[in-house]
Length: 206
Image 1 (spheres, rainbow, N blue to C red):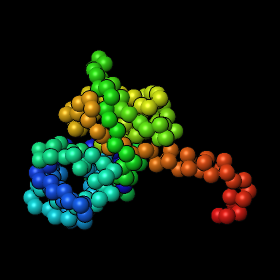
Image 2: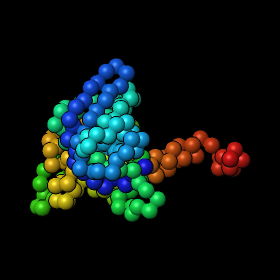
Image 3: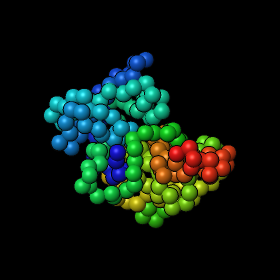
Image 4: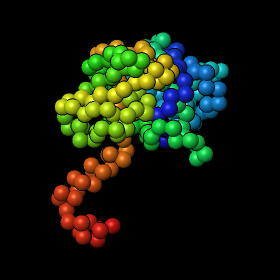
């Protein structure tokens, strides 16, 4: 589990893809990662399988590659990194599971004063999961939704976030990883069940 507060922008040193998954090696300044640790890489929860100096090796499953933008990474690509949440950690962003729901294309990314307005595509069947002032994880970054329109959401990026994440390398047309707020996921799921089932019957089943 993570908070969506990026700790380092690492660099891909090596990546190998195959039909059964893949392996990625990332260089990072985070010095206390150990074998077996969970690390968010562009919002994807991966397990460190090898640590050598500043280089951490992760294995990627076929599901991970099919759901995320990790399959498009190349040597030198910048990736957002965050170590897993500890019981005594501050909750700086929101609960992020590291389970990417879909990739979304950047429609627009333009300056607005000192800030930037980021607009990304959202599939029509996923719009229900987003709300103004709600949370969303984009490439593992905890962000706040400003506006929800048909087929897209808009997010304001403050200068600090832009300078300290891989967003400074992003361009229109790029694919970003999107994770729906877990709270929204369960609320929508519950409401869909309630539409089909009486509350009394539901409580009896518990």
